[in-house]
Length: 127
Image 1 (cartoon, rainbow, N blue to C red):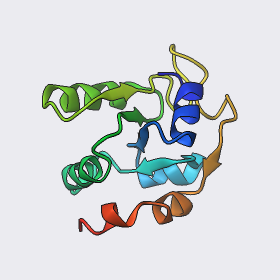
Image 2: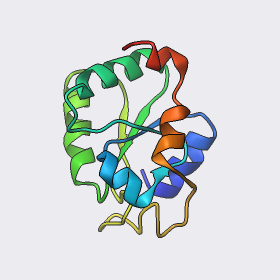
Image 3: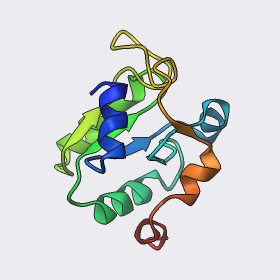
Image 4: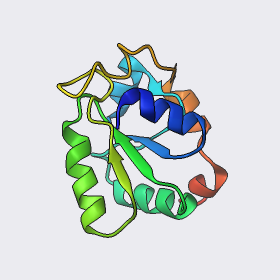
């Protein structure tokens, strides 16, 4: 899935977009508007993903990182465990061989704080 496709789909409510980068990365570039920031290397990553899947059970998931390397890895794990439909935003935030990336496409961004504040109560109550 391209960054443009992901931006359109998340704005339309058709997918759940997860930004699996670190808080430091979110602070440096911002978070894709509409994305759920869930740090892939945090200890509670599994719990957060499970809560997300429960809160958004009927929507496909798209995953974005910096350049697409981490997303493909995670997409395979989620798919292998039968946890639903998962798409890889392979060009990432900064671009890769798959495309220019979210930032160069000038797609909407929010701060990490805004992204975290925008998470649904059902998701946050899982903690």
